[in-house]
Image (tube, rainbow, N blue to C red):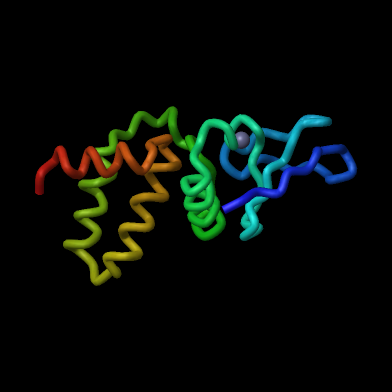
Length: 125
Ligand SMILES: [Zn+2]
């Protein structure tokens, strides 16, 4: 997997990083995945593994939001997981769709997929 790097300048308009939603500043670098789902800033490019960035950009493109958008809400991973289980129990919703939505929601609250998996293991269903 690779990213195209370009320098941001004002002619590109008011665009933001699709991971953290911060504005690009003049002369900073944009990282654009080949799959062209959006763009990320240098900070996010360094902070997150490439496959996680792609996964996030896909989920954010489908369901909206960005990493950590709701992180001040102090909702626990356990609550998110239990809520998803309730949805599966109480509705006919597709389990794959519910799984995607859970991963997406965890990202909005600033939880990485690894933390989500570890919490599910820890809860020992
Ligand atoms: Zn960013």
